[in-house]
Length: 222
Image 1 (cartoon, one colour):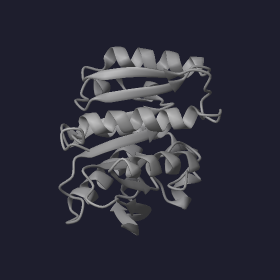
Image 2 (cartoon, helix red, strand yellow):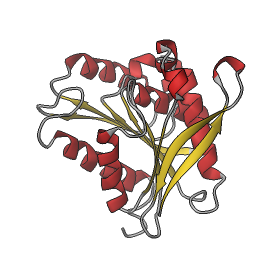
Image 3 (cartoon, rainbow, N blue to C red):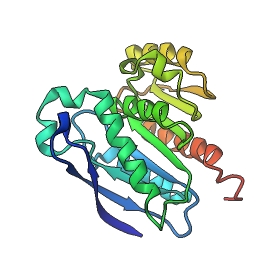
Image 4 (cartoon, rainbow, N blue to C red):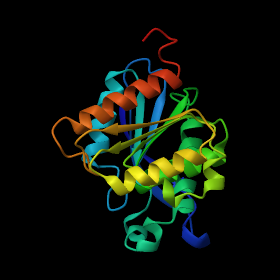
C-alpha cells in the first residue's frame, strides 16, 4: 500500500490551517508505523530518509514521510529552527495516523534527522506514551530544553557519526537529561550526513533493530 496524503495542521502564528504533503506506505500486515521528521533544508523527499524507510518496510513496518513545513513557511529560516513548531506538526501527524482505520491501531515510532530529531524528541516529551520509540540520526537534541528531554518516556536511540564531533558531544549531553531507556550509537567513520560507504546502511540496521524491539515486532515473531 502506497498513498500520497495530506495532513492538516495549524498555520504559523495562528494563521489559517495548512496542508502538509506526505507519503504513506506499508507492507502487507504491518506491525508498527514509523513517522519521519526531516532536517532543515530537506523535505519528505529526503533520499536518506527514503532509504531508511525502505529498509523499515522490508522489516514489516509502515512509514509516513511528510513535509514539516509548506514551501512558503520553509522560506523563513526562523520556522526551520522553530522546534516547538516542528514538534507540533509531528504531533498533528501522529494524531492523523491514529485517526486512520488502516494504520491507526499500530504502535507509532518516530525517526528524526538533524533538526527533525529535535522535533521528534519535543513531540515525544509532549505526547506521553503515544510515541512508543524514537530514533535520532545526526540529531540536534541540544535544541530541546533539558526539562523537555526529561519528559520523554519513549525508548530513544541516538545515532551519530564518529567524524561528527560537535554532534557527538551534543548527543552525549542530551543523553544525560533523558530519563527513558536510551542508547548512543556511534557509526565509525561517518560524518553528519552519513554519506560514506555503508554508513547509512548501518543507520537503517540500527533503527530497524530499535523499532523491532520497542514497537513489539519481535514479540509478534517477525
